[in-house]
Length: 416
Image 1 (cartoon, rainbow, N blue to C red):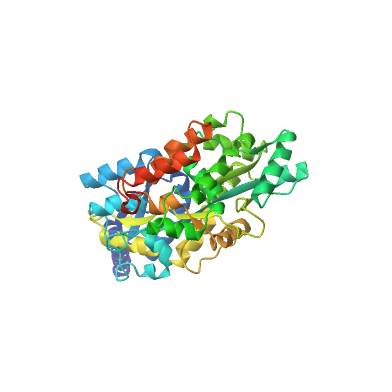
Image 2: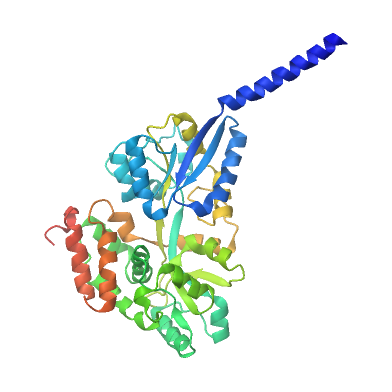
């Protein structure tokens, strides 16, 4: 009996030692992001990852959006940044690649790269050598939010063309309803506001000509599209010059405004703020009837591995998992974003509509092509659009400023 008791005790001790040793050997990696609001969702997805990799746990760490680039840059330079860094795409990412801060990703270390479409990979690759440094996170779509209850109560139908948009806006205004919630009080969104309403008047051919250097922003097509924005001023909130994006969102959510130019990234946010909201997300008004609906699309960022991380192997495992269908399905479900991962299910009806609109989307021109050096197209446009809307400069002047500013580093615009 004593022998049996000793044996059981030894077995229990060995088992306890094994659990303790396993815990001691577990690797904790940190995930840095600017998206504090997504903490619960990411922790759930990281728990799924740890179930598959019991020796790795993930710590979620978030930082203020407005300070995130500086925080990440400073920490990377000092050698104490997170193991996996949530990055933005395009020019934001390239500055860190140039400094050698991120690990190059390839199919041998991150097999799930094969699950990504080419345009998503291009958004997080280095233009110089075409190598990938951040696994794509999500695409974002810019379009028009519609408060369906406001339209129904007013007895009106949401517009599809520009002429319909102006006519409906006049009728809404006569009924005491603000047609368009947007103001110009948030610089970063002003650039998106421009893209929403100008892209339907441009074309993929214009984008190709622009990128190839066959034309500039002084092109009559672009100037005319900018001119359309001036027609919106009568239908924006009183004092729109100072109305910021958050305030615009509240005007829309509370039914004081019928429409809002915005992004698919706010669908989940708006539902959380007003679960009863009866809204739609549609393409902005087209130039004329019969035109293909054209929203604006760009890739929001990706997941990169810190080259100085002491846990690179574990970090690469996490990033590889973040490219799997299982992760993508949950990201769509929990975050309400459109995942670039092939085969991901989009069950939400509104997000399904967004995914369909993406098939004929225009690129977010400044973000995709003109954010790689200073001054960026974003900085130039954000600085001038408020002046144009206030009437202190013309669309021609804005287009000329944008072209000459970019010509300082974008060779195809030089001398034009």
